[in-house]
Amino acid sequence: MNTQFRLPRLVESDPRSEKIMALLSGNQKKLWENSRAKAVFLPYSENFIRTLQFEHKRGRIVRSFELIERNLETQANGLKMVDEKTESKRGTRISRLLIISNDAAERFLRKVEGLLVEHGDRVLGLVIDADSEKIGHLFFGEGKTAKIMLLEHKESVANALFALVPENKTDKQTMP
Image 1 (tube, helix red, strand yellow):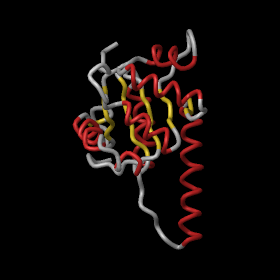
Image 2 (image 1 turned 60 degrees about the vertical axis):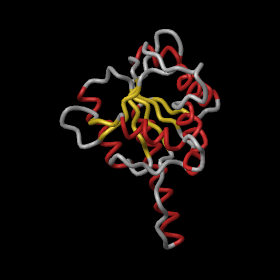
Image 3 (image 1 turned 90 degrees about the horizontal axis):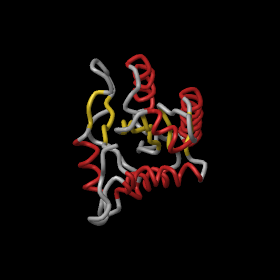
């Protein structure tokens, strides 16, 4: 994954797109020390979390590595079939966000790296400055953990990316 992303058209056509692109590009680093894949490392943001919670209620968040892996493979196969049927190759854009907790072990991050390398043309990894217990509690209830979640649907991805860039001065990003 490089520092330039093809964001959803909804984001690219919005006046906030430059700020979003600058935030994403400016906060990219290797997923782990010797990683081939990069992810965007972001501070904890109440606005971003509220947006993700809304999207979760809409059924657009997938939890667990195995379900995420299966979901991405299914989408990749579907896109491949469309390309073959139309005999053309469409351009790729970010259409999924892989939300990763900040306390994942290197072994787990190596598995995540595989997803980002294979699906990086349409999946953007975001490491949020919150641990898996906090993320699990916020989305799945008391005592639950979540090291990784996948936000699906380009409209939902656009909403989440818009939430990263405050529209006014009252929406500030905070650390946990």
